[in-house]
Amino acid sequence: VRPVAIRWARITCALKNKRGDMARFLLSNLSGEAKPGRLLALMGPSGSGKTTLLNVLAGQLAASPSLHLSGFLYVNGQPMSQGGYKIAYVRQEDIFFSQLTVRETLSLAAELQLPDTMSPERKEKYVNDLLFRLGLVNSADSIVGDAKVRGISGGEKKRLSLACELIASPSVIFADEPTTGLDAFQAEKVMETLRQLAEDGHTVICSIHQPRGSVYSKFDDIVLLSEGEVVYMGPAKEEPLKYFASLGYQCPDHENPAEFLADLISTDYSSAESVQSSQKRIENLIDEFTNKVLITEFNSPVTQSEGSEFSTKLAQKSTRKQRRGWWRQFRLLFKRAWMQAFRDGPTNKVRARMSVASAIIFGSVFWRMGKTQTSIQDRMGLLQVEYLESMEHTHSDI
Image (tube, rainbow, N blue to C red; front, side, top):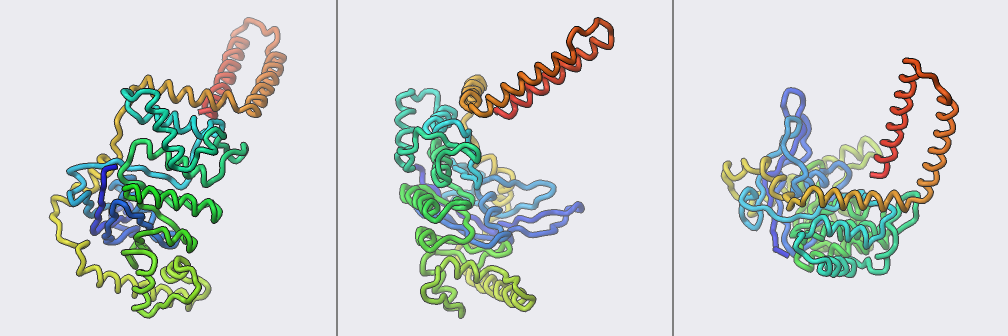
């Protein structure tokens, strides 16, 4: 794995109104750094900007007529425009074909991403290594499943998402709220997997809302965000507690540090007075950290020419992938769709009954029709209806 350190400075992201003016700031003058071999967590309440920052760093957002995006991004000390890097982006929702097994899902992803020159034996070994590395060996031959079909657990689906993204050997792994929807045990296993990936040399950045204490202890660094601004950034575990204690906010004994930090940077809407006091507290915390950051290296001067490349080159460089032949892609994707459709027994039975019922109904209506102009138009309408039904079934499979 190629070590990659990412540093960002003065990142500002805002929504524009119809006149082109900035109407709402999503991120305001953010600076920070993610280092290889360390797990960085972006924490904050809903609407704090953690997913927006994650998407900006991953190249998932770009400037547009309705979105202002500015700032500076560096990879291993060099401007982003001078070199890209491989990334993995694990989204909050896990989208898989329910009838495929874990091994088949990973094998097809490997066929699509690995070079054509790699032998089938090497690809199979690569897939088996990933299954072992992500703890999916015991469920390798189980179907993935969905809301209707029982399959692997939510935690195993999240680790399968990680495995599919790791095929390309990325230097940086982005994960958008990887513990959402998981129970405590599965959430801890997923975070332990991310922790292990960081120890293997990857740069791991994840957004998370309010983790348990056991999950919080796995973070190396954290960025606390509130209303699009940084409240704290630095080492995790005890360091933020010491920092806020120096400002007069002491974490009570036997309280989950993550819950204490989340409450500290969240607005309390229980009453009008609590809203006002909590917002003033957050503003003071932001000002305190901003003053602290002014003397750090994160706001070191950069030239305008370097920063101008940010919005135009970020998404292109970070997400570039090696292209495959279109016929090979079509063949693999068709194979995947066919496997899904062929194995979906209950759905196939329903479709068979619907086809028989449609044949009986249409057959009785159009039985022994004449050869007039009107009857010919009726036949054309029947063919059109049948075509639309077949296309609907095809799209549902894909």
